[in-house]
Length: 136
Image 1 (tube, rainbow, N blue to C red):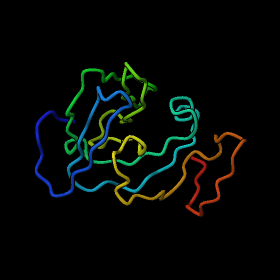
Image 2 (image 1 turned 90 degrees about the vertical axis):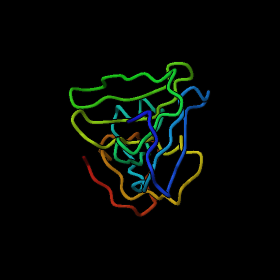
Image 3 (image 1 turned 180 degrees about the vertical axis):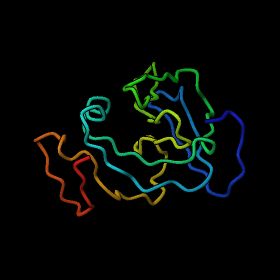
Image 4 (image 1 turned 60 degrees about the vertical axis):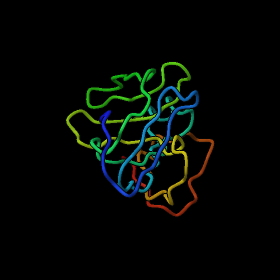
């Protein structure tokens, strides 16, 4: 992630509930991956629906309340420390950052491409959208 502008014709914006964390993504977004793991369920209250982009294409336009939490030995999660919005997930050493789809200002034509960690999903819902499902 950067604080400088990146040139691109596709620009997607988003942010947290209180507006103290805002971002712009320059370039294409990956379709959404729905993660049903216990960590995503706990941070989102349900499953996490995440798109992604190269980290260098994400520009922070407001970051006063952005905080990072090391959620495992392999990854960290970015959130707003004021309103609690779950915004980002990134694996250490990766050049890609996942972005919570619901924080985008516009839908950007995205769709769920697959479900992961479905063996960990909560019992109170059934996945019926026809997208591929993977245990991990």
